[in-house]
Image (cartoon, rainbow, N blue to C red):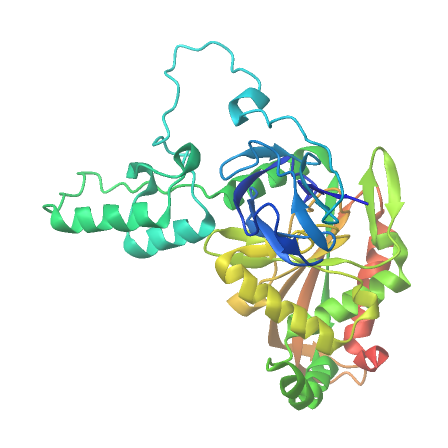
Length: 398
């Protein structure tokens, strides 16, 4: 039976994706899981994998580089060699799929106008390395897309030309990347539509650090990576969400949806902005498995290339800025999720002990931001206390 290849919904807010190019051609034999297409979303360039094994057939007319395709739209089929598949109508050009703008006295923006640059994250990175302003480059790719050769040709021409004098005010303009633009839009939407409150708690990390040190050699041997505080936090939060499922929910359509597994998004910073790849079913995974996945996400983030599964399906988010020296911060919820945990640095702090003595202990501050429609203050405090308990008694992970 023929299997459709359609534009996937890679995030909760994605409405359409842009085809960067096909990695297989019509008539090719492909295997399930094989990358067959590159897509550009507002977040990253992602590889679309074949949903089944068979022959790639009936690539839809217009489903080519530069085409904007709505989520769910069929682009081709995978079928048996002798199997008949439908011939789909041509995709409408991107201009036809968008509503006409209202009349205005302002001239229509050109492709060189700031904010209208069409380039992949990889091309933007090359432009940054070469010091090229993308708004000044004329793209030769489909739909005016800027290609790598356009950047390099522009840089060579600029090097051969006389140096330009800096403007008098010394003002520099920077493009807002698609990732930054989408993140900003989501955060504004979150603040405006979600009743949020935050709770902060201090955690004594003495035993968690001791556990980390005792497991370090094994983790390095099996993954090639050092066991990080983030990996431990992911594991602990996953266990706490399983123990306290009321925190592992989303607010959708006026109702509370309780998720069966903890799928934790981990915020990763890149030159192009913030992305939040998701570790699925954390409650079923070991520290070794979590470390491997975090390593894979960091490698993918360097080129901003994730699979269609990497950025979707999160039920809770973890944001750790402790490695940057941040003591404490409040993160904004990523709807429809109802919680996000902000993690500060570990710092030796004087602590009063039960015997009335004072000792220096490695303390870390955790701040939980909660959607008040799904949890009240007491419920949020109970979940945060469970995270604290599991960090201070990490043998519960074993």
